[in-house]
Length: 264
Image 1 (tube, rainbow, N blue to C red):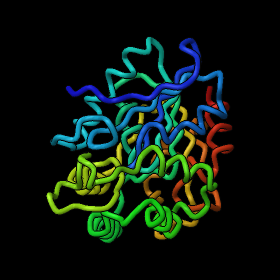
Image 2: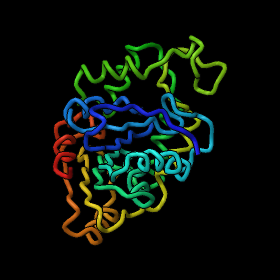
Image 3: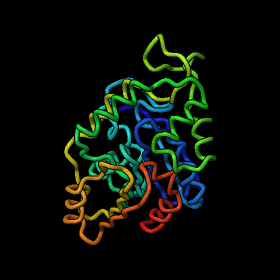
Image 4: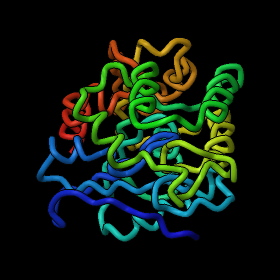
């Protein structure tokens, strides 16, 4: 079991919300959710291979859950778990390990076909290093961050971008130069494969709100997963089809805060 670096926001006695970022993300990315929910206690870990958490392998899904489960056990009450993309996959598996109050899944990447995963994984690892902060900003804008407010992208650049030529952890290459995200490229490559696993289902008594970003085509959210959730959770399952791209937590922060409030 490996200890994760955890960012926390809000009062100690606030309603606990465990927030799980996606691939190449970090815990402080949930600062906007914390600002929108000042009475909640937001617990936002850096996942394995990300940010200030351990970068060493293994990085398979079970290792992530082994690292996350103690965070929930320490809370003393079942939290709301919010998961974006890969974090949505982890959220469902976490609910199978420890008691959770509800799940809010934001365009979760679950049981994604390999034909969709391979191009994204290849592009990510082959375009890992960028020239400078401006180049990093342009790359984000060209991808699914085009809807995210300038001030939120500014925070991302300030908190998560590191200079590989300045003695910081590099992209696993002595030849790395320029800047990149505070994430292990090797871990990221390995984790992409976890997205292809068959989908799990949470316990049937757990309320689930699932957001599908309609601008993501082909979608990360599979029709089979939605149908299985609807059949098992019944009226505890709510689907939200939103006209946005993949970065739901930052592109539609008011929606995310509203969903957490609904289930809280």
